[in-house]
Amino acid sequence: MKSKFYWQKRQSDARPFDLPRRISEGLDACRKNTAGTRSETVAIRYIWIHLTRDGLQHGPRPEGGPGPLTLDDWLNIIDESAALGAQWVVIYVGASLSQTPVVWELCAWAQQAHSLNVGLHLRCDCLTAEDIQRVTGLDPALTYLVADGECTGALGALQDRGLHICKSDLHLRESFTRCTKPADMACVGVDGHLFSCGLVLGEAEYALGDVRNRHLGEVIGDAGLPHAIADATRFPTRGCEGCPPYVAEQVERLRGGH
Image 1 (tube, rainbow, N blue to C red):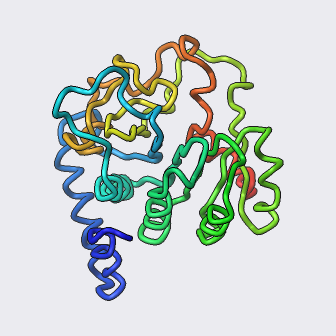
Image 2: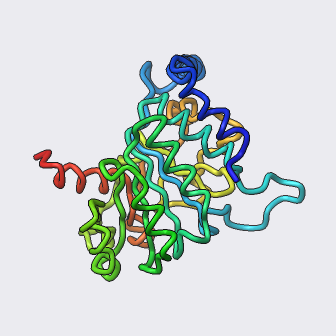
């Protein structure tokens, strides 16, 4: 059952000026919160969401600490990202979409309310019949399945139905050192902890705070936080798989952008 919060948002169909007003107010708030920080114009192009347990903070959770983000929290993150100019949301869902049903709420809201491109990063090809039905129910012009080489072949049938498949085999790319792609990106774990990107998820030196405590615009605009990876070779290259900027590059090629 969809939350009350979700349906309140969907009521914007009956009030066509409500959603633009909310987005405008959110953008104004983000600008105010980032005044005097890294730049006058703070923007996010990509939001990277980890819905599975490897998105949890490493180490024991403090007693009485906040639990995983709720649907309302996730929808607010998408709203704020869109208000800051986001064009992409990439969602890592692990082994099975069926185990993370909230993904459908996030995809629908990102596409219908904000026309965001949505990448679904899959780790295997164990899609159920219901998963396939839900995936094909998303906007095909804004939906991209991201999977490794072993999985992409199995997803060929979905490609025949109009969905796009992107490769996640970025661990095969040449190793690099300093990476500046996180400059306009935020990565959110299932417990609300923000990190520079998925490569350094759970690494304390690349922690950006808790999304429930700071606005995304404030986080991205904070020059004191790490918005680049100083030495990417220290981390397993598989952490780059599903990287939103790389997914976007593939999509541009698919769309004939070059």
